[in-house]
Structure formats: C-alpha cells, structure tokens
Length: 576
Image 1 (spheres, rainbow, N blue to C red):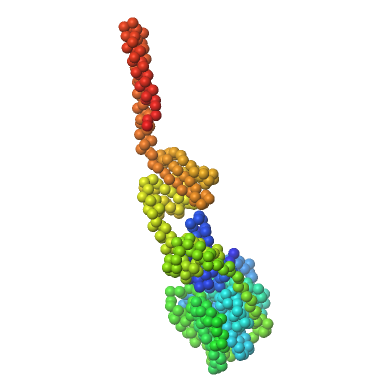
Image 2 (cartoon, rainbow, N blue to C red; image 1 turned 90 degrees about the vertical axis):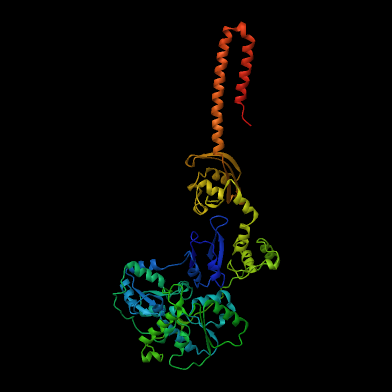
C-alpha cells in the first residue's frame, strides 16, 4: 500500500486532485462499473506533497498512519523519544508552546525534544561544506522526491546532507540508547522518508500534527488547564526559524554576514518552474538554493492544523516563538549541540525517474477523435479533466493514466445528443444497471413507474426497487430476455425486454406497464367463460325439448344446436 490511498466509494471522479497535482501523479481508474471512475495515486510519479488530500472535497484520499503502532509501543512500555517539528507553534491549536511537551509526556513519551536541533546540525553540515559550489538544500523531502523522480539531471546539485528529521532522529538514538524515535510534524513525505534505504535507522515512526491532535482529543486531555513544561535539552537557536522561507539561510549565517548569493523558493509549482529554469540555464546558478515545496515553508504542511489562519499569521507565530525563547548566545549561532559524525550527516541520492511511453501523432489523433476532436479548433483545452491541454490528456490516455470519458465538454455534448432526448421522451421505463446491479441511470418514465426521483434511485442496488431476477439471468447468460412479470408489491404487471451491453458490464431493461391491458383481458376471459357456460345450458335444454317434440320441431332443433355450437366456438377463439 502506498503513502496516499483512495477510498473508491467516496471518490466522485471530479478530477480536482488531478488539477491540484503539478506532476500529474494521479491515475484515473475504472471502478465499480464501466462509467464509474476513481482517482489513484501513482507512487512511481508522486512527490508526496499530499496536496491531493487537501484538495479532495469528498475526503476520499488518506495518508498512511503510524498512530496505532505508536500507541501499541507505549502500551507495551517501550521507551519512546519524540522529536517535534519547529512549525508546531503554527500547526497546532495550542494556547502556549510549552503545552506541547506537557501533552507528549502525558501521552507517555519519556523524552521530548525539538527537531530544530536537527536543523542546527544540518546548518552546521552546510557550513562545514563551505558552500563553495552551488547547492540545492535537501531538507525538504518533497523537493528531493521531485528531483529524483522528475529532474534527475539536477541530482549533482542536491546537498549531500540528511534532513533535520533524520539528523535529529540519529541524535536522539545516540543521546537516548534503547529508545524508539517518533517524529511529529506537518509533512506527509516524512513518513516515506523515514523508511528510505540508507536513512531508515533514524526515525521509527512519523505522526502528522493531525494524527497527534486526534490522539490528544481521544484521550480527553484538557489543554486549557495544562501547565507549560520545557522540552528536553539542549535548546536550539535560530533553527527554530527553519519552517519559514529563508529559515535555512538565517540559521547558516546566524550572527554573521552572508558570504554567498542565495535564493529561496516556496510552493511546489514555483519549485518546478525554478528547476525547469535550472535545467535549461546553469550559468547563473546562485550559491545556496533553498527550496521548500509548501507555500511559505513548512508552516503550510498538508498535515498541519490551523489552516483557517492565513500564512502570514502562522509565519508570525514561528518568529515570535523564536524571539521569546532565544538567548543572546543562541542569536549568534552558538548553540550547545554536539555535532554528529560526518558519516551520520551525509546522504546520497539516486535517480528514480521512470520512462513513460510516448505516443506518435497518429495515436494522439485517434484518441482525440474518440471525444469528437478532429480539428485543432475542436480542442478546447479547458483543463476541466485536470490536464492543461487536450493533447496532454490524450497522452495520459495512451499511457493508461486517464480515460476517454474524462472529457467533460464531450460528455455533456453526448448527454444532450438526440439519442438521449429519445430516451427521455420514451413512454416506457428504461433502467440501466452495472455488473453489480447498481442503478446507473433511469429515464423519466421509470421515475413515474417507481414513484421516485432519479436521485433516489441511481447509485442504489436494483433489488431495493424491484426483483432483479431477470436482470441476473441476462447478466449470466449474456442473451436478451423478453418476458411478462408480476410485481404484487407495486400492484403492477410488466412486459420486460432486458439485454446486455459492453460484454455484460451494463444491463439495460425496458419495462412496459401492461397492468390495465392484462386486467382488461382477464375481465374479457371471465365474461367469455360465463357466456360459454350459458350457451351450453341452452343447448342442453334445447336437446331435452327436442327429444320430447322431435317429430314437430326436428329441423328447428338441429338448426339451433348448430348455431349455438358456432357461438361457443367463436367465444373460445382468441381475440384479435
């Protein structure tokens, strides 16, 4: 299972996640029925910024959770050390920063530190490198994923330094032998980073701020009356500014003047644009390039709370926290943090780019034609499907990452076509179900038959409205069925023509209400039977009379018998 999963039942194929994903790491799959689509994250392309999770209006996307394992470890008495991302003052609804370590201790953590200590170690490693050559900061795992998966030509520019989380995890492992380490922060990509080969020794579990706060709520902990406590030492300094843009630069050059040109870029799309520029033109590369995938820095991480506050208010909280806790010595960068061995601060990066098939022009034209796009002017490039252009979407269809029916203007045009108008005007009920007998569409006549609006029928199982036996027969046999059925619960008799489409994945039923006709026929049969019985009585009586007065009325009796027999025969015949 990947980092981000989709709940198919919730997904409404609105393509909003696809529109939100700059690297188009979303595959649209056919789900429950041929016309039901759902979005699936492609792990091989995903940079794990988790913006699709925030963008989904149906809450169909979910980030993998370590919360259950962390609770279990604590319950078993395993000593646990927690590292808290420096953005906690902006990402959690705490009244006072000191409540964070107090909450963690109440939950059972024996050691609690700020991961800003790891950021201090990262800043030291950068100073040790000298920054004589251009370098892209490697603190943001989303940026690392972006370069490894989409811009591997820029790998030589990535700083060969671990992230603050990894540095701090190793620091705590060294400081607290026998402890399991837990990182708590706003970043979804940290969950995958903690399991990356070569650095998986540093952090055992990763919790998002959202998971942590859910835990606090479940435990019923009252933050209002909780007294502040301090984090375990040592105390970090300027690295508490790491989660805002420019934080790395401020920490490296704390207390001194910058000796190298630098640039800070935040927001994933801005990072992509910058990397594209860098790939084309390396001549004007600045010395230190600080790239953070989230807008404004880690204070806008996808697993952070307090999203109702604007980015500037969150930034101000981080700065105020730093100012309130800073000492004069820390302001100059003299923090009492023991450096880790160089080997524990180093990291190597590798290309994880995959080769995607490229369609030729004929293949693209063929795919475009399937949605009625035969000329360049037919290509609206509206972006409703999630892709910038119709041709981009055609390429995705060719690669198996998109479906033809994702074209919303085409689907609307098809819905408004003459055939659909005929379906709407049909006097007989039409019911269309998928292979799981879920009603996908009904016409107005079906609404009248079932005395329900289409919205109350579609999306539900057919057996909630009628006996599905005939639909099941057609699905199993693959052949058309023409039959008459009685539905006592609806006081209705129908003639049904049911047939399969798309190799049985869709079943169409046309139901003709013949209740009135059938009852009229039954009444006719009753009258006919009564008439025949009466005629038979007449013949019997006539024959009795004939025996008594045979001599006088012989010819008349014979003629009457013939006429009445013809009448009985006529009555027994089927009507036209």
